[in-house]
Image (cartoon, rainbow, N blue to C red; front, side):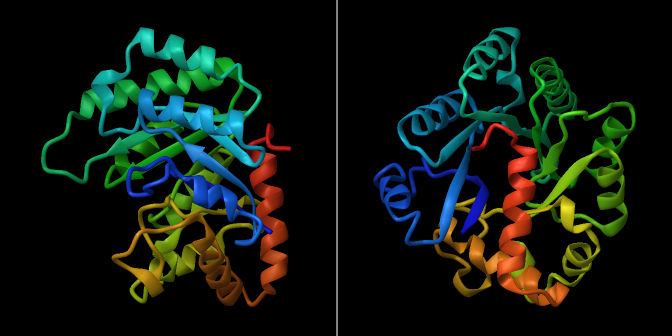
Length: 255
């Protein structure tokens, strides 16, 4: 059994709000799914799904696309939501400079506010970082992560991974690892210590190579596991055990 450590099963691309995904979890080889918030509305939905479904857990946070929404009032709402037993992390938050127009200062401010909340609550953090390595590594250098965190859907270099690892963070791999042009990422997957490696889908996004262009599903985390086993010359069952143990250690409220 695997844990999908990062999925958005509430997404409108799933016509039933994720009900069929949840119903099929055992059949699909999934022992748990971490449902990740991207704004207040989706965070509330994640919490509700976790309340009502045994093997669903939630995170609350604001994606870097929406930094202007991160106010003191929103932080107060996340603080209250995080009292729930099944809210396991703050995130996803971070930096994303991919699009031509973005507010760098607002993204950094929103990241800092959510980092401070996670430290206050003693919860791990889920980081989204795209095309912003310089600013993010500068952020890392001046901060500590006693409750750890994870680099969601990692796509950076070995060198950047080492900076994250030295800061007590985990590295999570998604569907991109299965792509034929993922040589650099494959090197990272072979380099990361086994006790710092976890898997995810980011469903419904970033489908693995066999279904690019289609809606992604949490069950496809098995293809990411398969690729890691291939790259490291290990049995699939061993990668299952390692990644589940790591995910539970990171998100320590998962039972």
